Image (cartoon, rainbow, N blue to C red; front, side, top):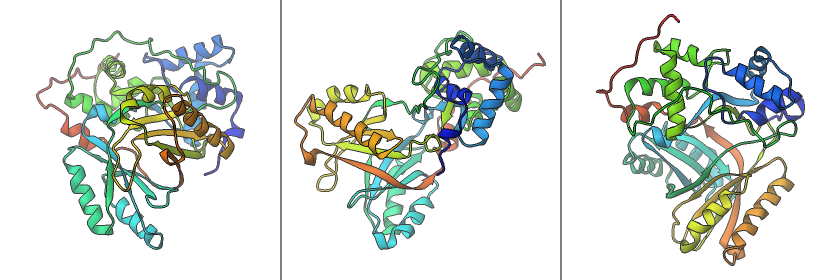
Length: 365
């Protein structure tokens, strides 16, 4: 994939660095965002800021602008699965795996045996076994289910050289005051809102009002619900979501570790504290095939930077236990085989209570 890092203007770089989370949930959020940039030495008005974010979105520098939905909190489940695809049949096996709509992501990774890694997303956890059984029957290859047992970090942020590098601008306090209601299910209107914004917000001066008009609901309810969802964890953050490949982060390394079980709870937060680690989980081992129980994902803009970051993970691990050469590995991705994103429609539907009360219709204000 072509990288565009060198083509970004100073303002583009400021936008990417500043707004990967904490975007304001107010009627005209770009006005508040532009004011915050001006306060930090980046002169821009709201209209220009809208235009630049739209440009970054349309040219692929951003994957989207808007909420980053936490699928796990919306309903259903997802799991990571590894398998071996014989080299002579690799593309055939990839097509068979990818034909399942439940497969959201699929990567070829460097490993002498487990060279295909994919994510299965379903509304009902009991369907994972059904999907994997079908894949095994079609491909003739065993699958190794590696569900998340403990999450230590999910913070995929990618910065570029320029203003506000790794500093960020957090304006998440701007917006309506909200109270958590303790519900784990969604109302029908909340489900519709999640599905409407999962691919991003309209890049306009009034994105929340545009969403409200599309759904036929009150704009205040949209803003209150989105802000509450951030507080509840249903939305991880609101902001720009960079396309890390476009920004030059092409080295995608999945480091895996055979951490002593009694140390996982201590090692996990320490590794998660490394700012360049984007995902950090405990997952099960598979005896005789997969000895690792700890995953830490790193990204780099060069082989040298990536290697340096992997070494920093190893050094952090070594502070807690004697890490041997056979206790860890790094699996770099060599090809994206499928990347459709997590489909939330079925998962949200399964977690929606039809008895919930509707919201107010949109007014003319």
